[in-house]
Image (cartoon, rainbow, N blue to C red):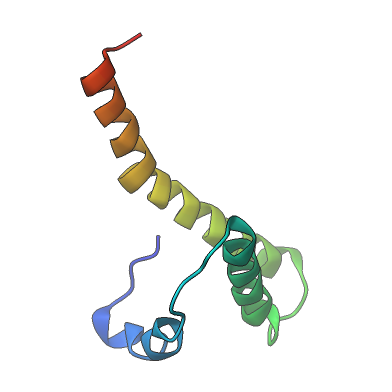
Amino acid sequence: MPYIKKNDRVKYLPGLSQIKMIETKGDLEFCIFFLMKKYMEDREVKYANLHDCTYAAQHCADEFRRRFLDKREDEAIESNGDV
């Protein structure tokens, strides 16, 4: 999951906070892919590391879906009625 201790966040937040806006889905994909490549820079290219990298991205997508997309779907059901 994307939750790390607050004191561990300080090493990443200054650089990540410099990104003012991500304009398109392609831009977002570029940023995510760049971070995945950065993660792999000093790691051996073996299944476990590739798996960790891929599943980190997937777990973040799952958490985003849980927190935002599912909430939006529940709001649509509430306002439009269930199927």
